[in-house]
Image (cartoon, rainbow, N blue to C red):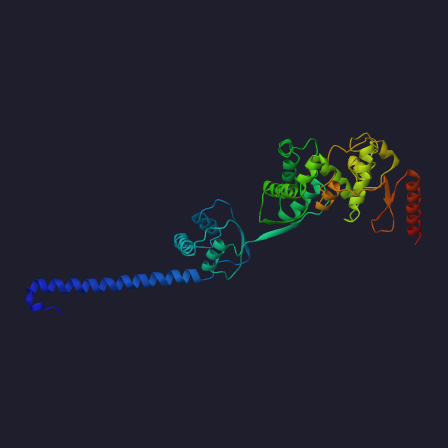
Amino acid sequence: MINWRCYPAKYTSDMKLFIKFFAVSIVILAAILAGGYLYVTYKLDSPAPITKEIIINIPRGTTLKGSIAILNKKSILEPALLFEIAAKYEARQTGRNLIAGSYKFRPGDTGKEIIKAILTGNRMFTLKVTYPEGISVRRFADITEAKLGVSVSDFLDIVNSEEFRIAQNIPCQKSEGYLFPETYEFFAEPTAKDVVNKLLKQGQKIWETQFADQAAEAGKTKHEVLTLASIIEAETPGPEERPRVSGVYHNRLRIGMALQADPTVQFAIGQKRRVLYKDLENSNPYNTYKHAGLPPGPINSPGATAIDAALNPEKHGYYYFVAVGDGTHRHNFATNHTQHINNVNAFRRKIRSQRRK
């Protein structure tokens, strides 16, 4: 206990005043800190001003401060400085970093939840897009526009460019066959380049992991394999029949016989319709009735089963095949032309009988 009688009156008075001032300052500081804490807590726990579902894209390379700025373009995390400090504190405490991508936020989401989302990715928003096997480059473009909002022209400008063909080592003027058909997930608002790169990357991954070694052992280039696979893809949707169809084409290629594949003629004339006799006289290099060997390049985008069939043909003595005609997409196979003509006649009878029903 201080004995004030030991000090002069003036000194004692000043000391008391100082202690009183110090005590008041501590109280004020504590009140400010408490008020600040309550304000920060209130802002973090309060719903952000979101009136409807919103999707926000945070590009790769964005800093934590930059992400707050992007969010604040929609007035979501204000004041920015407060949320920058809160986000950096949360990142240090959890050891997490910003995860770039597209996020979906809803009415009722708090500032704390939004910060946690961009550091964990738990509100990441993606769009699923399925590209079926056997489709054309143009169909890829149409689906991309419908599902992702990327214009057909922007997509085709990339895929049909000489730069693209050189980069992919495509030895012809068409870019068919190099975009891999599969179901993909995309962040919101991708560019045409984003989409094309993802399709190419997946196709290259599948090729390298599943088919590159087989092709090298067979002495075939990727372009040759994709070209044959695309014809097999177009000829039959049945995975169980594809190795047999592949065997027919391998047998024909081995003896220099024309492939005579209707899908290549359809590709040459630019229409997917019944092939007419006059179409067989078309001099287009994709007309495999007129030109022996493989056409210049793929006629569609084959899937993995068709590529596998192209590299692993069934060994047999068949040189011909024609549809059964019963709607099952199955085929009758023949070892010689006479047997094939019989199968063709059977097909025509089947079609006529179905038309009469």
